[in-house]
Image (tube, rainbow, N blue to C red; front, side, top):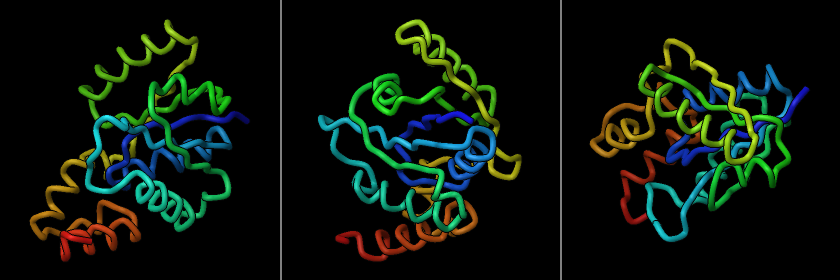
Length: 165
C-alpha cells in the first residue's frame, strides 16, 4: 500500500472531497489530508483549525478516520508531500475544466519535485458540489445537508445563524 497526500483549502469540506478521501483510503491505504493556507491571506469562512477539526470529524463519521491524518501547510503542495513522505498527490476531478487546471499543476509538480499526481473522479452524484457554492447556498439560508458531512452542515448552520460565532 501507499501513502498519498490530498491538498486543498477545504473551506468547507464537502461530500465530493470526502468521496475522494474514501476512494484514496480504499486504493492506497493511508491518506494525509493537508489544509493548505497562506498566512499572508487570512480569511475564509472557517479558520484553518476549524477546517482541520471538521475534516477529522467527517472522516471519523465516514469510518475511515483510522487511515487519515489531517495536517496544515503553508507553501507548496510538493513541499507538504516531501514533509509527509507520501508516494503521490491525489486530486479529485469533477469535469474537464478541473482536468485542465490539475494537469498543468501536476506536470509542474513533477518537473519541480518529481512528485506524481493521481486523479480520481468523484462520484457522479457529487460532481457538481464545490465549496464556493456550498458557502453561497448556506449564506442565503439554502439547504446544504445533502452536499456536506453532518458535522460540516451543523457548523455552517451555526455560522450563518450567528455571524459573530
